[in-house]
Image 1 (spheres, helix red, strand yellow):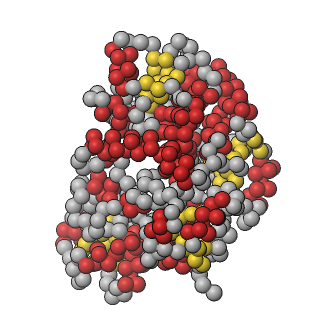
Image 2 (cartoon, helix red, strand yellow):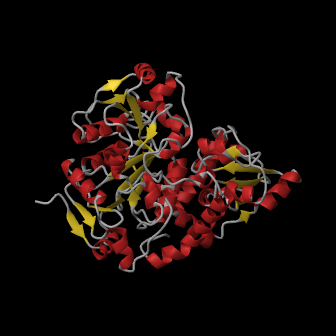
Image 3 (cartoon, one colour):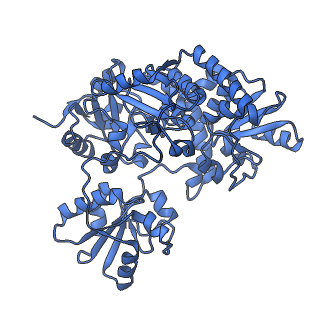
Length: 528
């Protein structure tokens, strides 16, 4: 019996509309996927399949369709691998994305497209109030009574922000706003890097009925920079957790939103039943609090998905369409607000767990499920440093090209697992290969791939990966040097581009605005 079936583009189109569970996965590198893909295709590069698929597609009986550019290799090998791991309903889309396009179906560029398109839909349907960079700058100059809340995670806020802004990511807005802006006369400005999180964040506050006037900063920090204003860098101020009075107001506001959008709650007994049914119906249990809160203690079996990011990049957390989604937080505010948006995005089976954390919690980060993992021979960072001084050893780094560009071991070469042969062609065949990746896990998979190709060659993994090298305070380098293949593994955000940054920003903003019309032509998104 074949490890997988073939599915025509017409069959896949019908699957997307039949209401049954479906995980549609594009197995190409993200930088390639970015240019052209199916709307609901989530990107899980074949080279990272073993590390990511079990968390993203937890049920082995899920109906899965894989695709690549032309059905010419990566999807087929990925399907065979999934069959080895026990996935029993796997198909490859015949002819790949090219056949989908030739069949007259819509193809999309970009990442997190469904979420980005939803943001534009929200602005159109709600007519979310907005303010331009020039108007905001004038209000700052006049010292008007206002607060700027940045709806992105701290690392993005720290990188670039609006001067005077305060970090308050997505689902945190309603939770913290009553303390952050206690004066109802204070204008609340919500921003992000571009458009989506500004729009969703501002509309969240409006939906919650806060007394303040609320506006979204049009085009976010990109619009600010394109207007000629200097951004802030390195900021760390975060909106404080609510006090008793603020929390009571937040609970009441979130409760009204949940009632308006039909958000249902379940208790722990029902969650236990659903866990017992996981072989029949996919279940995601997602904790929407901050990373710090999650690490301090979370519900066993839950995964971290901060509420704002879950709405902004749903496909990075939930791959199986029509799955059950249970959202978790400590008091219901962030879970209810997040659920209200997922319901509007078309996710029917979204629920909030009542009294979610009223039991023994698990600290730290849960261990990810790695499929087919085998330990390879390792070398410590200090021992590798010694061997590099002696020579006759080459380091291959399998970080993302962006991570590699920022920091890597001196003399290392950057490579992709999906293009190992290109790397081997550029390195002498008689020297030892030391494989590294950010945490060392992917490196073990690569080491076994190399041993299959070159059984006689000495291949060792850097124990703990590049992080161990950095923690040992050993010298690092930066820059895009010693690349063994084209660096198209990830999508580079406009401000991560090496040149033409302003053009990239404007192009990105134009792309977001135009998504509404494209979504309508495609016809598969069921926004409400």
